[in-house]
Image (tube, rainbow, N blue to C red; front, side):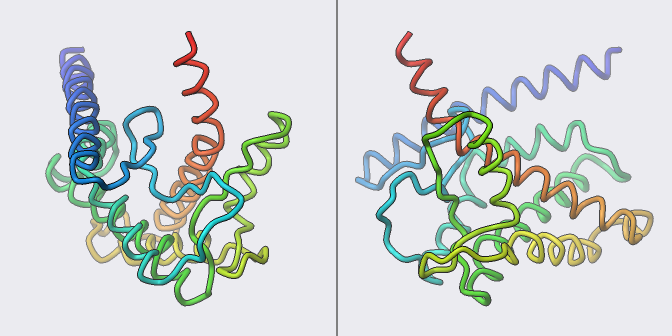
Length: 216
């Protein structure tokens, strides 16, 4: 009981740190004239959502820059700390944190920059922003399978499915032997695709929720 309470209290503290860090990061961006990222749930970085119909073509340089912004945003560090508190696996907290951070770095760069640059895919999420709730839910979920080329044509999302698979395979370099099995690797791949799909749903609907909250 005490251990659970300690975990919850520590997680709450890390969430508070993340929220404070997000505000500080956005204030710093505003002070330098750089556009701050629209944050999901007011905290999580979101550099990959396109909310307009007319956008510039994504380049390889931009894809890597976007991957770096999302991977090393100040909020990422305490957020991974919260997730590590409740993660399974052997080793100390520090070891589990390191593995989780490694997963995040490799996964982000594989899906946002490396694989899209090889396959000529646009790794951004193009928000629909209109239509019925069910159709938008289906659209957001489908973006894990369907994406756009850099010229705007629809295409199979190799970056997401193959990129996360590659990341899961590479993570075997630093996971414990018990977590290097085929089943464990597939579980990490499936988990990453699932979380990316949930992220797409947030990217689609968070602006609507944010607007309604601020109207009250």
